[in-house]
Amino acid sequence: MRIALINENSQAAKNELILTSLKKVVEPMGHVVDNYGMYTAQDEAQLTYVQVGILGAILLNSGAADYVITGCGTGEGAMLAMNSFPNVICGHVEDPVDAYTFAHVNDGNAISLPFAKGFGWGGELNLEYIFEKLFGFGHGLGYPRERVVPEQRNKKILDAVRAHTLKDLITCLEGIDQDLVKGAVAGEKFQELFFAHAKDEKIVEYVKSLL
Image (cartoon, rainbow, N blue to C red; front, side, top):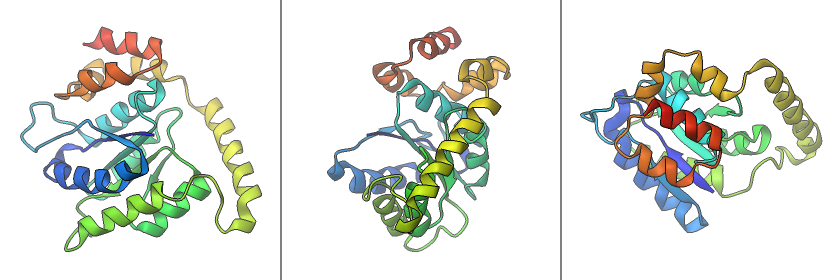
């Protein structure tokens, strides 16, 4: 699995800590981590939590990433922005139980974490435990186990509903202020990472038109 890390501007100073915790847990599992920044609070390309949603949707819909780890001060804004786009199911995760149940009940492809609220002593340990429960025990297996059939059925129903209520990604992006979208893909390492791994040619061409 290719996992993308995205930090918005208010919590950019924690990027290295989050990256270290994530890689420590998931690389031994065989997963790969791509760090899309922000890398420091002083980065030239500044991402708002709205742009986190745009960037995350581009990565997931293009196949450049299989999973997105993101967040903001409370985790709420980044979650809402991510869930504004097609083919993105982003959970708000504060602890390892949230991570485990989201993986097995909701079977999404992104999480948003609170990197300021409640993030104090032992914060990096909580991140490690979250990542262990999120990636170490499979996905979509249900919890509790006797609920697996209705939970899997409900996930398919939700996917079908979202397919009718959300437009395709390029249509969504073309209707947004293009300067906002350009800012979302202006990160220092975006082009290096994205073009090496994106699989959807239509999205690749659209991104090229922005750049």
